[in-house]
Amino acid sequence: MKQIHKFLLLGVISTLIDYAVYSVLILFGIDYVIAIIAGYSSGLLANYQIGRRYIFTAGVKVGSTRAEFIAVVTIALFGALFNIGIVKLLSYSVWHFDPMLSRVVAIGAVFFWNYFARKIWVYH
Image (cartoon, rainbow, N blue to C red; front, side):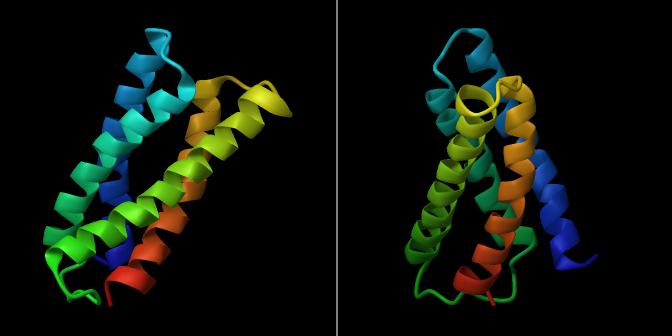
């Protein structure tokens, strides 16, 4: 299976975790920014652990596991900001789409950022 296909499958798993946490928090009336951060963080931890063991196995461009984790988290932080921006744009400013639908759009867009940023800057 090609690496991007494996990453897509991993993305589905980590997105389910992310979206489940996000949805529960939204249903409990938690602010969407906090819900995105909590969900995204939960999905990121699963994604990092599984990704480094089963997908990005060829090597690391950074010097240590700690540096690798910091690089992945940095990429993810930008991904979280992109998520927040897309949801804000689609649901809370320009348009008034359902926040759950907006989050699905944001997740799809940010998938490509996450894959290519990790592929280019963290792993070879």
